[in-house]
Image (tube, rainbow, N blue to C red; front, side):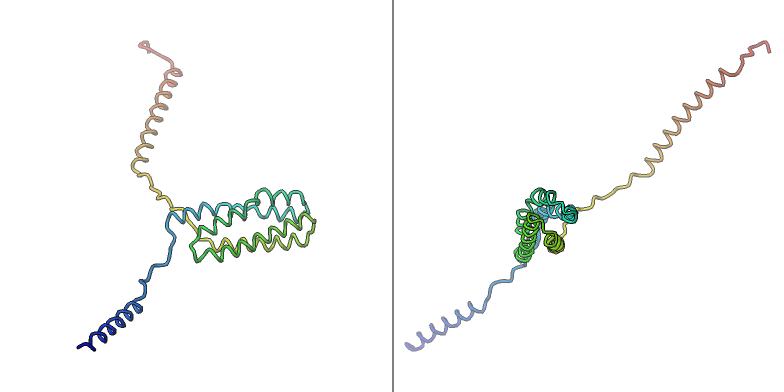
Length: 196
């Protein structure tokens, strides 16, 4: 009996260790976008959409070799693009953040290269970097989830109410025209009285 006790306790320890090590963690659902997170993404996406819409203005300035306006545009409307894209990337789900940040870094490099080319008045580098930043902004936008506005339910007014209102309006107009016409007839028609 003395030998069985240590062996039994050893078997119990091994069985417990085996059960604990084989019973892995419970599977958790992958993170998804909540309505609040989607609203945050939608808010942070606004500067990206504005930058994409206004980017052709930079292209025109570079094409015309208007270096002053190109520089002003880079530091004006596009001046906060680095911050805006970083905020937007950080608002994404964890597994989507790294690819978005990588593309954002490429965008930043292109803007820095455009800025340097504008300072040096180097058309070739500026236009090539502009083409690169344009395609990278499109690639970045494709990584961001689309957020759609819930469509408001359009309710048609009841046709009966509209028809009744139209009939009432028509009757009022008709009564007014009728009264006007009677007055006009009375004014135009001679009064013959009882002598006739």
